[in-house]
Length: 131
Image (tube, rainbow, N blue to C red):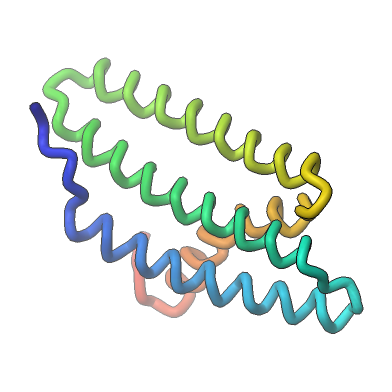
């Protein structure tokens, strides 16, 4: 049985993504409040989307960790493709739920799926991570 424990680097980077995504979520809520569109459904949609985006990032790291343990490239490639498909299906499911459930707002959910990418971009621009 293989070790399913996340490497320290995965935990560290996920924490950075979580902090950045949390900041983005707060900024998005401020914008919603400033334009007079803030509501509990907006907040819940944003929280759900942000939580899934962070989870998705963590799962990506775990998939890479697992794929690097395979000795065959074909197995690693299949693992990556399979994980990508499942994570994207999860993303779609979360967004659909936020649009369908009456007390959730799907737009902030969708917007918050971009927060990890925004966080990575800011970290790159400030020189805290390199390509």
